[in-house]
Image (cartoon, rainbow, N blue to C red):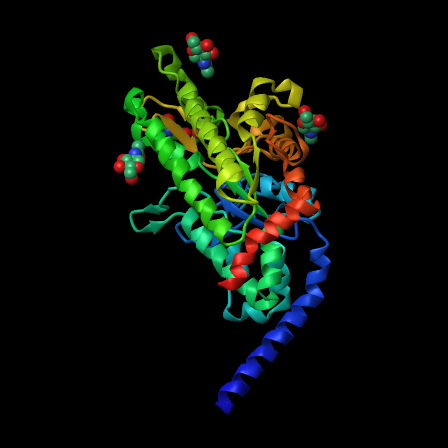
Length: 407
Ligand SMILES: *[C@@H]1O[C@H](CO)[C@@H](O)[C@H](O)[C@H]1NC(C)=O
Ligand SMILES: *[C@@H]1O[C@H](CO)[C@@H](O)[C@H](O)[C@H]1NC(C)=O
Ligand SMILES: *[C@@H]1O[C@H](CO)[C@@H](O)[C@H](O)[C@H]1NC(C)=O
Ligand SMILES: *[C@@H]1O[C@H](CO)[C@@H](O)[C@H](O)[C@H]1NC(C)=O
């Protein structure tokens, strides 16, 4: 008994000591709004998660990162900063929160103030190649971290924050934080790959319904874990990415793959928007969202290159894609140290065979942050975060979180 009490009291004084150490770091961020950013999704958001996967999709080699500070290839799937960096910078952070893997490496990370400082500003769980339902396995090779696993990883970080801050402050931190998502593109691309030969009969409506419902469950899970502010970047105009454009040659046969792929993206984006509206208006009290319209951003830039200072909105700046009369019909030269590199990155809309260049990302990020519909709906990311400083909203979100203290 006495032993138990003394163990208990030394554990609580240990936790108190850690909390105090945390508190000395915490106030600096408490003033920041949002206090932290948690990121989920695919290669549009990944800042190095995949670097730790030996068989993963990688961007931690030249020419990736050629325009990142120091010219470093960090694992970001573009030439410079990605969407998440841009959004984080608008909110006063230096760049995206760190990838989950480096943060979680090592057993003693709980006691390290420096890692706490990282975690307390958020974590980026995104993994290139992932989707909403993408399983991330190619035979026995693990290509990426699934969305469900990303959410489990968030749960771990949440537990760590709870140990460090106590549940009340952890819940405050989580409910005021921004949860950002880029997902759906790889699901739709995989569906297209599977059905493209017989595309008129592809059960796209059913697939979109399945995808939307899976994403709905994932968002609910994050809501149960305390998330309230969801910033969702929708699926870009997939028909305009260089790999899809290479199939334009089929247009003369009456099959327009660009239209098929853009149609997939539009269907999903519409269903996703309806799902989010429903969740926030009637299902999850205090849940708020903003949709950043990546679809419109890519359409704008590819429809009117000159207006955006672009000279080439069809080909990748790094690597090459080319139609070949063979299977598969697109010959892709991936971006690598030996791949061709365009001479002026700011004149290309696409960095590699899939991902946009930094100028396009910057244009999009600004619109998601402070733009108006159709670029940011129903409110923009700034409003999503700023809104909560008003008393009624804050009350609502804290009430919703209250139930966790009982758990
Ligand atoms: C949608 O989900 C149902 C139920 O899991 C499944 O039977 C069906 O095959 C799915 N449809 C598509 C197109 O993936
Ligand atoms: C494909 O064909 C349609 C109809 O002929 C045309 O309007 C469209 O511009 C073509 N698309 C491309 C990418 O060439
Ligand atoms: C694919 O592209 C590469 C580089 O552009 C080229 O060397 C190769 O011959 C192409 N393959 C085919 C089948 O055309
Ligand atoms: C790159 O292109 C941009 C936009 O056209 C132009 O302003 C800039 O001067 C170019 N830079 C170089 C090094 O040519």
